[in-house]
Image (cartoon, one colour):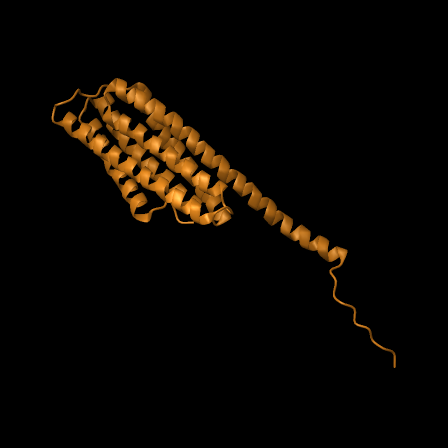
Length: 231
């Protein structure tokens, strides 16, 4: 009887090629989505930075507390996005040290939101009581906020798509934050339009109070969670 010799199972070149071929599209798609995630983060930072400068300057010139508050909120949003980008870029390093540094940064961001809410509320109330100058028309501010109402939902939609593809809770939370900026823009746009088109100057400080309420909400969320998002 001839002896049957069992050879160890070794992947053939064909099998290895098949495995590599099947995994490559997944890896390529993952890399592509991650590039999109970073591009969207950079776009958010760039847009909010431009938004902050234009809104604050035009708001001060027009005496619009709604525009100034809108611009200040954009400044803090940029800080939040930078913290998220910093954390993502340091994955795999000293996790405990990164967490401690991030929590301190987020607490400072939360305090910034509270300061914005207090400042805008004070300025809006004094304006409504006739203790400050009435806001005037700001064409630049009106165009800026109108553009924001269009741009921010598009960015939020793109972030949700990429977050779904990557399964990223962080990016999904960031998309929700971007969507919240859309509501903020809509509130400010309503106040500016009412003042510019109908002469309802008091709508501007009322919109400012809306900005203060949203800033308070964002600050409370950051303070209680100690984090910008769940990861």
